[in-house]
Amino acid sequence: QVQLVESGGGVVQPGGSLRLSCAASGLPFSTYRMGWFRQAPGKEREFVAGISRSGGITYYRDSVKGRFTISRDNAKNMVYLQMNSLKPEDTAVHYCAASSDLSRSIYRDGSFGYWGQGTQVTVSS
Image (cartoon, rainbow, N blue to C red; front, side):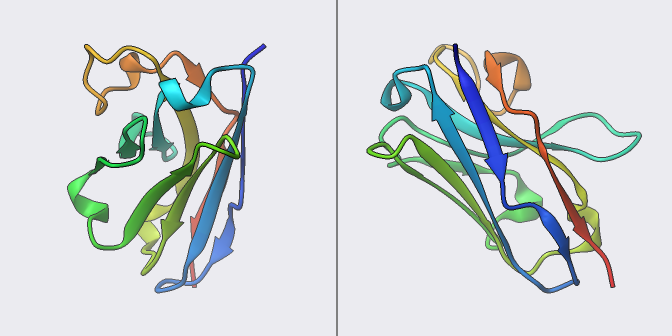
């Protein structure tokens, strides 16, 4: 079956960095767009970053542009989220997701059919 397993979360001070990883299995990885979403306590899940099947096109929410970088390695079935200059408002559970539906917006969580279990990112001094 399809599995998406995130890792790399943790506690970091403001201004610090973390690199999230997502290992995918059970699906033809290179045919799926991949995304990262996050959900803070009491808030709705929100789009963070997305990447095309080849990795040639990336997408970001405005608040993370210039700070976060999404990338993928199709040979290893991995997707990454490099997070720099972290802020307290980045604190959330971060989820990896996979989408095979090219007709739907990469910015919407409803476009993604497979999800990981999430990894906690906490930015605090």
